[in-house]
Image 1 (cartoon, rainbow, N blue to C red):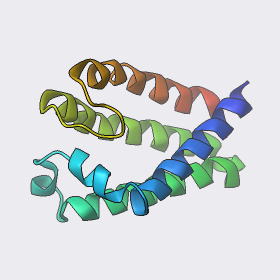
Image 2: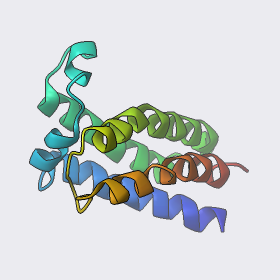
Image 3: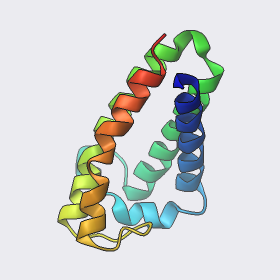
Length: 126
């Protein structure tokens, strides 16, 4: 079961990363909180590109680096924690994106983030 969850996370992260870089790039820019470019040395597009690269790399690392599985899982969990404030900001600022077109849908997504953190840690334990 751990292997299946790890592979599902890997595929999801690679897909999400590629979508940040290509077909979903503009929509992801709309989801970047206004305060993010103030604390990062790059604009919203740069944040989208950087996060897409990180997502794709983490997804690939889950598969390609079995000896580093635990470390990659911890980094992935930290990544999920790091992007959570953006999800909260999207809910608070009523920003639509990727089918999240109501406050109820945006709010319903928030509890999924701790599940992703748990899945990243659990699926990479030995």
